Length: 266
Image (cartoon, rainbow, N blue to C red; front, side):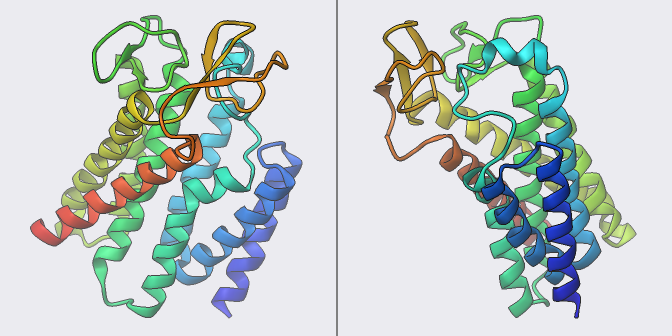
């Protein structure tokens, strides 16, 4: 019964998000599937973490839209998430929920899920708010000043946004943990979220597929066509490692760090 209720709620939220312009049709279908599994298997605690990420990230994507419009040419996709973006951010969480259904006694699975959600939330907050920083971003690997919206570019403001995004998820996760381990779990999830976000930046600066528009002479994640209509040319990275794959690895990194720290210190 809980699983059926979970899929009903997942579908309802997906439809509302589609009507609000936060999801494409394919994204709504993917969100209904991942949300249904997470809601139906994990119950309220797992559902709240997923909703915290989805609601906050969607709100930030729509906020300051005009100020960020000039940077849209940099990013591979817009604010309407498609199926690939949904699975990149929530697919691992749904998989962890499936494993949890088989092994509910394994407490580290809940922590891994929280770490994954903290990582994607931290990364999204850093991306959406970091571009508003008054200071120019610097490449995370070399410190070189780069254009706003460049993959792998970080700012102090963006890092603080990542910290806030991870802390919010960690706070909610810790609230469902015994009082004796509240601060332990909160700290672990924050570290996991920051680690996942940092991994995302490093991958973006080194091996993510980046293209150049020959007409605009600008780097972009868009392929095969830039926003101007010109065909883009790959300049670095692995073609298969697009932004969606980087986001998935971000969530995987957050889950791995959280689970490892919990197993060692809990």
